[in-house]
Every structure is written in C-alpha cells, then in structure tokens.
Length: 316
Image (cartoon, rainbow, N blue to C red; front, side, top):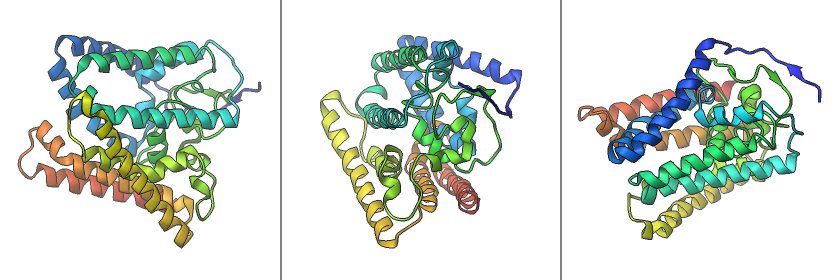
C-alpha cells in the first residue's frame, strides 16, 4: 500500500512526554480507585470529566494526542501493517463505538459513579481491547478511529476547533481508516462521516443517528440520579426515551424544512454542548467550591464559548 506523507503540525517532544504521563496517570488512577475509591471517583467524575467537552470544543486533538488508550492501541498498531477496513465494516465499527458510549455513560448512574471495582475492570478490558485490535488493524484503525466510544463526540466538536492543533501521532498516512479520519481530515471528519445534502439522507448512518439523538441523550442522563444496580433498566429506559424523542424531533424538523446537513451538524453539536453545561453547571460549581454565582458564571461562559464555536462552524 502506498504511504502518503503529510505534514505533522504538532511535532514536539512535549507530546511524547505527555503521552507517557497519560499512561502513568491511568495506572495511578486505577491503583487509587482500589485504595481510595470514593475520593478518586469524585475527582474523576466531578472535577476532570466535566472539562473534557470544553477541551473537545477547543480542539479534540489535545485529548487525542495524549489519550492513554490511544497510546496502548499504538503500541501494537504501529508494529503491524494490515489492510484497511472496508467501508461497510468501518460503519459497523462506528456503530459499535456509539453503542458503547450509550451503554457506558448511563452505567455511571448505577455503577461507575460510586463503585470503583467495576470501573477499574471496565477500563482494563477496554485497554486490552485497544491493544488487541492493534494486532488486527494497523495504526489507529482498530480502536481510535473506529470503536472508541469518545470518537463520535470528538468528530462532532472537531468541525470548527477554536485553536489549531495537529496530530502528534500520525506523521504519515497508510490509510488505516478509509474515510473520516479525524487525525488527518480534521474539520472535514464529521462531514465525511455522513452523506451531505438536504433532508434526511445524513441520518442514514450511525454517526448521523448519533448526532440527532445526542441532545436527548444528554438530557436523559441528567433526568436520572445515582441509584442501585437493580434500577439499571429504569436508567436506560429514561435515557433511551429522551434519545429517541430527540431523534424523532430532529428528523421531523429536518424533513419539513429540508435543512442542509452541513448546517444541522454544528447546530446540534452546539445545542448538546449547551445542554451539557446547563445541567452540569451546578455540579461543577460545587466540585470546584465556587461561590453562589458559580453556576451562572459557568453557564454564561460555556454558552458564550459554544456561540463562538458555532459561528465559526457555520461560516467556514
């Protein structure tokens, strides 16, 4: 297979150091979760995770360049030269990643938010999967650009990054992903993940369905509370109901007004981001011990940030 050389915007030894630190921090996190489960989970879910959507909005490559699971995938993926996945298989892998996201996030409510052992076990399993898939599909095609549950969110917010950050992992391209590679396609990745045009055409693949359901998915999560494992069906039912409602509403609006997919994608991304921080702001303010106005400040700041992002996405 012909290898295409591409410029590496983010070449810097600092990224290599950051990747090593990322793996070390993952090991520390898992160890801390077993020794001090409550403070570790509180730090992770209440202080760290709420910042990630804002990081994705600024530029998802910041995270992708240091993600420890991506580093594990690379350990094996760079040692093997396998054929790229065909388009039907690639779409299937995207569907698997989206399904993982929609299974794992609600599971926080009845499992991961308060129980360290299943959280640590899940991370270890995903890490082993990332390593194993690197032996089957070369480079990042086995995990990072296919079944990673965070990938669809990265694509959605990678449409108009607020700062320029290139790939610190891919200095050349061997087509491990046949289309929509966020590492090298960048802003075009979301567009390449759907069929462009007016009407419902763009919703006929996994990524399009995900984007349409995503606002409801976020609201559905916040309509639930931490509970016991026996209430897992109720949690999933609530999140699913809101997700399906979002999907139906978006489909109806797009069909009636024949909206252009290239306009709908960033608008839905902005709406979802706004909903996430609107509902999440009180918890973030509490976690960071902000004064009473902290919730309002976070909401206003994040709405302002996403407004700037949306303007750039719609005018590019």
